[in-house]
Image 1 (cartoon, rainbow, N blue to C red):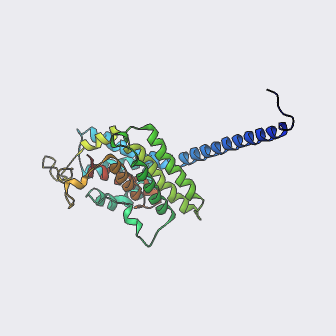
Image 2 (tube, one colour; image 1 turned 90 degrees about the vertical axis):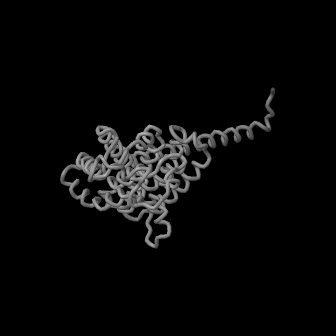
Image 3 (tube, rainbow, N blue to C red; image 1 turned 60 degrees about the vertical axis):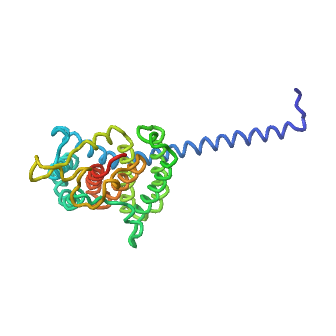
Length: 281
């Protein structure tokens, strides 16, 4: 095939445009990947505190044949806080979250929905609510049996959180606002990873909470009979998608309950309480 000399310059220009377009597209994708990776690294600090806290509680309860009391949960969480933060900081944190633990382990599960109508709001709250809406919508595209142990889905949910963080961090006007945003979305990042793992869900469903006063008495905080709550049994049985969104929202709301230094442990307590309260259908 012989090229027409008149068309040759046009073909060269078209080729150059195509090369530039592909180059720009690749560069844009590289920037997105780098930004996502950076966001993930930032959020992982609080994600790891959340997940390792739950794993620590789990390992300690296993030593007691999956039975524990609210007092035992408090003690185990305190031990974890001391191990992570050291005795000096731990003392302050434990004082901060003591009343929070009491409310949580009595079945008062926090919810981000409670913050939606609040007059007092902040960037972290807004970002967390928006992120949970996107996660809930994304989960609705999957069948129930596709949700747990789905690596591809987990990556997509983590990407939603990272993009939300990237969109809101530039709106923060102070270091405090940035820290609150990192704490909230970091906890959410870890929560999504932890509660889409079927082994974690199966394990927590087996924990039996017993009465503090009499270990041999009937359970007072189980999915069968829960003290200090008026919810019926059907409200505690959730689909996998609802289970993830409800517990993840409780975790994230828990991060708002304590002061900055106590946000991680408070979220762990909220997560444990929600996992003990709700179950998967």
